[in-house]
Length: 448
Image (cartoon, rainbow, N blue to C red; front, side, top):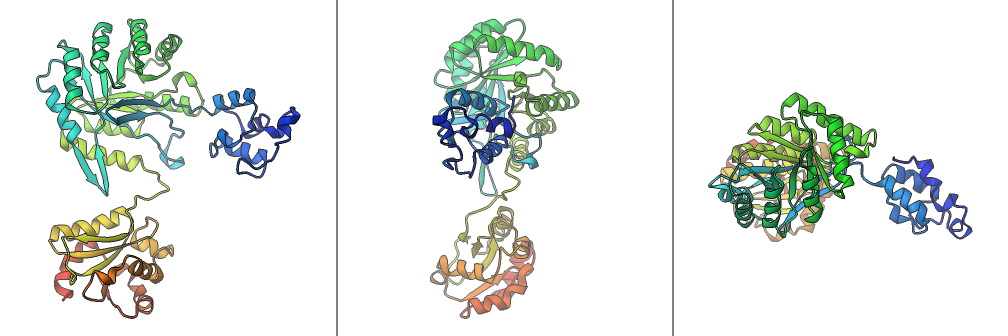
């Protein structure tokens, strides 16, 4: 059960009855002025217990148990690649942020002739999105009556991604675990009929284990998870057994709320979700609240929008996506190519860069540090002004790259023209278009 700030304070040196511990009360070694202030930050999960070096062992054990994440972190790994789920602390991303993005797996069957080829294609697929390389996360191998162990081995050799073993048969499960040696796969799934054998295997091979109930029966799911935990398996993933839109949304949300709002440890585990070949259902699982999302097949046309959706959901809403400030070369510019200015908000940068690249026109792009804001927003917030632009010009040595002294200012901030002329008296300041889409035509007609 989570402790309040005052309850935490009673376990810190400031409230200790031990004189040797009490003398460290309000010592400030934690970085806060008082033990009470530190306790309040601990209660809000804005500080770590390790910051206080003087907590008594008995108190530390209780505080650590209280501070444990409400949803257990589960990590699958293979050849340096990881797929993680859990450790989330909020229902909605705007409350704080989501930390571990939903991992997207593609399913292959053990009677599928091209299983290894599909695994290789999944491993090779990547998308460049606003400066980020987006990839899928792993392969789920389903027992469909073929050679399960051989398929696991072939997939492992074809891809360095983590694996999910989808079988209810303990014999095939063990063969799959042996074939996956050197990785940490997810074993899926333990059911009321096989849980003892599956739990034994999960414990022996140190693999996380899915527990599956039927038709969203949460009582049965909790009971099964407790049995598996009692058998010595701590790393558990929940499969509520629902596959449609409505039931998935209701049950997944209920599990998330129980774990976070009620601090119900019995359901404090990530969820595995099966979307079939329905990208809309997969999108729902990414947003609400699948930890591992399994697709029935691989298609770049399906993967791309899901990866972009995930990238947008699992970013910190308080920190805009940014690119590094500096000088960027578009289409191999020569010293006489035009010099343009924009901000380091990723979407703004890529809007400008993509328009120039597609036009084939060469150019230099000065990306000013505007703390991740778009041009107009940065100007309104005082994060883009003549002084910052001039600083960028001087810091990045633009003059050494050009045979001219002309800068193109974004049309939205034409008001900065006079001030920028004062900051850069040797430069000619030109006002460009407001929208990136108009840049190619502007350069063709106005630059010469």
